[in-house]
Image (tube, rainbow, N blue to C red):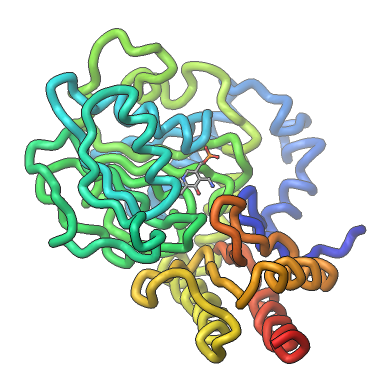
Length: 361
Ligand code: PMP
């Protein structure tokens, strides 16, 4: 098969076609280098330029202030669940976790192994359908940090505005919505995100962290797990995912050419609106998240019965709409429509939804 289908996968996810084309064109030999990007040393001048472009790309798109470092690590966002508390949860302190879905729960589980945690709120009782109001969160002014998940990929619940947590450093898992919209980095102490949704292939994790927090890191952490070591070595303490960082640099260039994060946000909102409109138009489809925190990246919904959901996924797959099955832990349907997902694919889904209801409703 050489035709590309519409890929609704939650991650690894669809990448921009111009990025894949450029990578394909330069696969055997980077222009002027005579080697594939996968064959060059991570200590070479060429790679130095590539990682420099990746960092500059993120800095420019996200308007990252100068007092923040950008790291390209490995181990996925899942390793950050552990690294964040290992570096910043002090022995006599406690960290606040705001739980709006399954990934926040996983982050909490790892933090508990490191030290004291306080569940500032959990929205589990309502089935993770919304984010809490400020009044619903019991935040401590003395917490080591507050952890949130900006977009819960499985439930499709997204913070539209980050909570105000005062002077406590806010840590955010932005794996599934980084680069999808503009936001103010200076409100955060640390941001982390696996690359495999909006930034590139799996195997690279971006960490953006505020310089002054480095002073809080305890001595004698395992070398690779110490943010200070990674900062001092500019993410090159060991061999990084050179290929992944290269693709990430191309993705940043693509986003820039599309008009940056404001343009991206506008397009993402339009795409998401088309699917939510189709869900709201009928009782046959039922959206999972509350309207004011519906994700623009992962649209989650149910059908009247599980066997209909199975049929929906099978029929859609047969028509070239792939990856619509909801996460195994919650079921239902999930359409992941990241930056690189084309509007034509969203239109194809909406038309399929109407047709499916006509035939099965
Ligand atoms: N956090 C969020 C919000 C995610 O969506 C995911 C992956 N889907 C993870 C963490 C885990 O990421 P990884 O597989 O890169 O460890």
